[in-house]
Length: 369
Ligand SMILES: [Fe+2]
Ligand SMILES: [Fe+2]
Image 1 (spheres, rainbow, N blue to C red):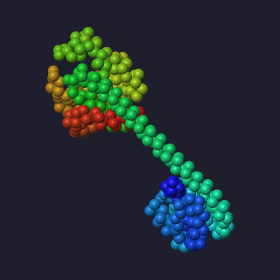
Image 2 (image 1 turned 180 degrees about the vertical axis):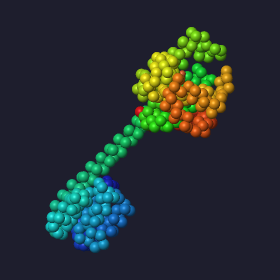
Image 3 (image 1 turned 90 degrees about the vertical axis):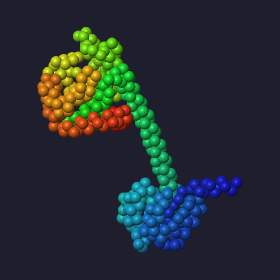
Image 4 (image 1 turned 120 degrees about the vertical axis):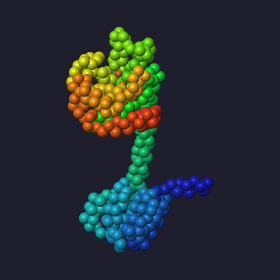
């Protein structure tokens, strides 16, 4: 039976009484302990700060104004800068209204004039304790809310990454010849996009579009997609449908909506000779104009079964030659400024890290819309 009141005493709020007069400290301790509060005492501001820094679990601080070492107002200021929510009650012997005004301005919760009636003091303390409890509950609520949001974000990221991974895997299973082509063009596109000063959300759209640019090939029949020899005109006709098919696949997914447009237009040429729409110039979305350069660049610098890769510097020449016809000349100008070593390093890194690259990229992308 004795354990219950002891436990409730243990749970009671903790009050720090700061006064240089022992009689006053004792008076407070006696009255407040009687109400079940846990009381600790300090003789001046300095001692109070030392105690608070050591253990900041006080709910209310009672602070005398006139004290040696460090006075009440200065102690209040320091405590408030350290613990803005702390409930501090100023206990003043002077009825000087300026002191009260300063104390309230500095964040004191309330004030008590000496000599005081202990019943009035108890009422002030009770209010201060209730306020401290409310602040504590709000903090707990806020903390729980943050945890919930963090959990849901994590779940969303998992879903988001899973969707992209499944799509890429689906295409890789159909057409494995191109190896890490989609990873390389994603990283190349991000590099060129950064040199074009795109913002984070534009880069995210660009990366997702690059990663999924050929996703529509899932809809191209095996006899065409996997045909070892040259395609006939009719077969090319079907192959070209992959841009539109990719667009149709992605446009329904909210976080891929913008990238879907890039997928739709990734084979357009600057001079209007591309497909599916024959768009030209800046009618072609910026992402697609950036992407088509790195797509061609990676195709040239990667080995395929029917041809060898060419050197990076030769491939840059090839891009330059198609500036103004296939590619946007303004973007080609930015592209050729980038050191060849940058592309070489990306290619080596991706070839080394393989599918781990995708995990890192998806994590990065998950931070943006
Ligand atoms: Fe394509
Ligand atoms: Fe490609």
